[in-house]
Length: 464
Image (cartoon, rainbow, N blue to C red; front, side):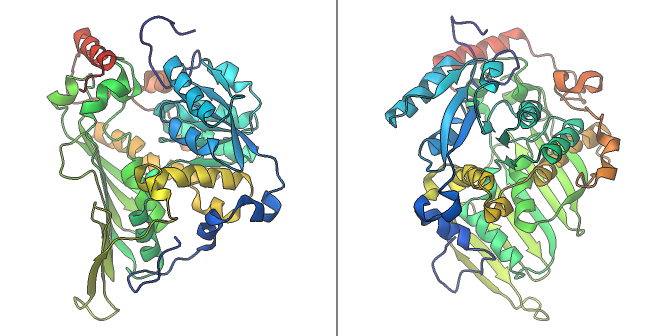
């Protein structure tokens, strides 16, 4: 058990303890499938065969990030929250209060994963530490539970193969909670590209420019071996790469990784990795994708753009979208416009991360219920691995002097054996003998006093 005195750390993940329908307008492009958005507005009583089914019993593993999913499940007509697991008791207490405020008193709260694992559950949301989603998710799938995992999918390529094969063997639902795919602007970009208005994709950019330095104490707690302090510069690539792949339906086939040196403002908070990661990714149609992410001082939080042979579209970062399109044969004589896309479904824009948080959980629940449109919109295990693989192998590219690395298509069984035992990563417990430091350019020894200070700031509620 974890200590009951002092301030322990939240978000359990270790085995021993843890834890649209849019307004009609000339500015709107056609949406391939609209009926699922209309269904959101219907009462569950009108959903035919789904209404007769018992509520799905869902557990949530990790009550920090998992609180978003917990709140949604508490108000679901199709699912019920039955258990929550986290090693940090104050988070469990917060969940209990949230549930009791909704009049729900029969939820069980666990501090140990093994106890949580034995609870009667149909499905589990894995919102635990990012490098351990596959580790725990595979156990849950093998026990007959459906799972949705938060970002990221796996710690290394061996886990990617094992996760895919477990989903295939068990037949259980796996969805990936890449919420940056479901904001109104990025959903509109997806619809525009898939309408054919941009032609064939030539170049794309995905940037997730989240300087986490101010919140580092509250997300790493002064733990030297916290996954955020151990991860490589390219590991957390899914917010930049994921939306581009989701918009276009394309697949990554090659990556070259790059990074900046470790910056003092992050070293002084406990991490030695490169402070900015970049992947240059070749997609399966020959297009180039530039992915940029990690801790950088920037004028904006994110950037996404698609450029085809007939036009381009860009997320302007303020809720607006810019679109330029040409007709075939009319070079440089196109139409440019900007506008604000309507929410995918009215009211969901306030659910967190620009509305994306609602749809990840909604599509997970509906997928379990057999809704084929929800399954088409949810991110499956193959696409989830594709969204994370460029970061995993992008760091191998960095270690090899930025050499390009071919990316396998793990949908094909014949491509899996080459990666089945590949545990190369920066997390010692996951990597075993294939462990590599998260800084291969210089030896940085961070003294214990740095982690003591970060912990002090966390306990005092001070920023980094």
